[in-house]
Amino acid sequence: MSALSLGGLRVFDMTRILAGPSCTQILGDLGADVIKVERAGAGDDTRKWGPPYLKDSHGKQTGESAYYLAVNRNKRSITLDFAKPEGRDLALRLIEKCDVLVENFKTGDLRKYGLAYEQLRERFPKLVYCSITGFGQTGPYAARAGYDLLAQGMGGIMSITGQPEGKPGSEPMKVGVGITDIMTGMYSAVAILAALRHRDRTGEGQHIDMALLDTQVAWLANEGMNYLLSGVTPERRGNAHPNIVPYSVYPCADGYVIVAVGNDSQFQKLCTFAGRPELGQDPRFLTNPLRLANRDACDAAVASLTKTRTQAHWVEGLAKLAVPCSPVNRIDQVFADPQVKARAMTVRMRHAATGVDVPILASPIKMSATPPTYRRAPPVCGQDTDEVLHELLGIDGKELEALRARGAVS
Image 1 (cartoon, rainbow, N blue to C red):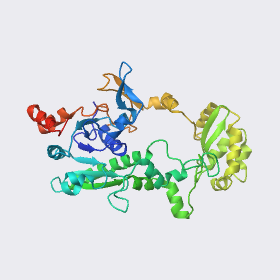
Image 2: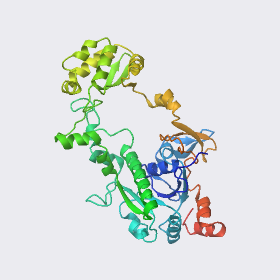
Image 3: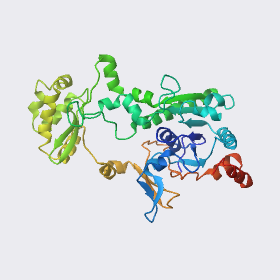
Image 4: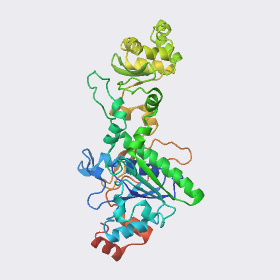
């Protein structure tokens, strides 16, 4: 096994759904020991978010949803009821053995169990405590529940996603996956690593306050800055780019192709390859600002060229000229793509519910010395309760039976 970047780091993971589990899976992939705390008999909400569900070797559904499997590898699952005094005591004893706590309860909810940051900071001064909520720990919306779709809507991304106003399908459109959740998970992982760096220098832990809405506003990126500098509210442009032309999806003889011209030289190469070098010298299209001012005419001219030849003609030919171009792949075509295969973007892991290897999405992180590893398939609910309690707290035998009898664990 390769060295683990975060080997020796332990995470008490009180998250569910997507943002929190995305964060802790990143930490787990990089070597952290992630202890996922779940409700007995229920577990992470997303376990039931199917179909599809994982099937065993006989084709029978196991009840492990694809959604859950996407973001919960490299974790150990324990069932723990911290609403009970014995469960709360176990939680505190386990937190004492951990470097990081990640939770995504509604703001203030953990206070009634004595597990809020301000209640733990004196007892665990080195603890890095990350809270992930819809709207953060402060502000007028702090007490509200928040989901990805709400953050996409409130954070503006839906107002610039979809067809332009007046065209069929011009209503606001969400991104096809829970992208605000995923981005919040990524930002949270970065923040945790930064806080650990601070702790290693000073011995001080801290509270990290992450919010879906904050994250969505932050990654409005160029469109957010376009508004801040110009005062002009960005609009939906379909597949078009707000600042670059031609940069869109265009018809070809057997489907569609993406042409993403980033500079004037690439535009001239495109026109020459298409057999229309004079188009590259058209006064309307000589520079990107001119092409932007004449967007409709330029897009129409490019579409008149691309529709005459096949997708392969454009993708293969323009790639040789360093002009960005690609197909528009369906999901099945993505996993069949030779580049995706070469980059090993799927792995197979032995799952406890099936006893056989199952396909899992891989980490995109590539590191020469300490790459991500795939040590544990996404666990079934409570799969590792006995192991964790024995390993970390020395609990087994009659003490474990007594805890189960009182409902502290299951």
